[in-house]
Length: 464
Image (cartoon, rainbow, N blue to C red):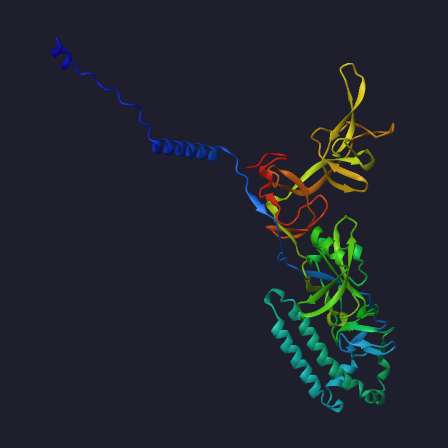
């Protein structure tokens, strides 16, 4: 019996042995699975840190030149000959040209007795310089400038030849035909120009975008030895040194230029630089343009109506933000006197008129966030307010019904972990970035984090 009991084998139950390494690995694996799941199921909001910067802005424009110009018409019929170079300053009652009624002057110029109409060395040197400068500055896309240059050279040569004839008027006197040559004197002092285009009495308020695009622009050139009739334009006088150039730019750039009041302008034709006063012009259609007013340099561009310029601007440094972060948001407009503060923690708010179940009126303090102030009115959010709500003035029986809205340009600040709208003031922009004014009230400061894509979030949305 004892032997049977001794041969019976009992299985020994092993104690539970927990492998801490496997447990730790399992926890990490589960954590990674949860993180991956949350990554693919959660909306991702990219941020952008605001820093100071500047932008490259294209400041090259083609503008319309406006001057005080007077067209002088002929009192005679005949062949005209000029004796003053275009762009020269002439005094009052000085001779500009002659009108030959009989046509005899041109014949006398060709006769041997009048002598050779050769150009002086100084005149030849000046013409060579003009040709060289034109060759260096010529661009094929502006081929029309070749015609202006051709007329200019022709005028210079004819001026020299005609002056030789003028010096020999005693021959005409002896021929008995001088009475047919009428001398035309300038009615006043000014700069002589031998062309006209219909913009001589142009008003800055009549400027349009189509005019700046040169649509339909034509210029009539006046040339020596041409036949003119009584009443025809024979030359033009620019009577004032003050002149201006009209350009069109975007509203932000226009506001920036107006704040500067004066700006340096480079004329691309010869790289000369001059200061101009900045004025805002609004035409009859409500379009805005910039008028750059000069009190010098006019004589260098007196025969040009459209002038290529570059604005030399030392860009003010500001906060640089992507355009994708900028959004326009609507707010309720609340009069300043209806904004009050709570007695507990001094938070901004308004007293809203509410009604209980029985229709009895009472007042309730509604906390608001102020985003801007303009003309004694605050821009506030409408989370607990809406159009038509009645507001009560503290310690007064006055009431105000909310009836106005206003828009602000801004970005969503994410410093607090949610989308917090902040107003911005754009100074200037290009296709990708904007420079905004720093340290503005209710605005951004350097190193703030903002939402990169403003359209991807909504106001007060929690951000991760």
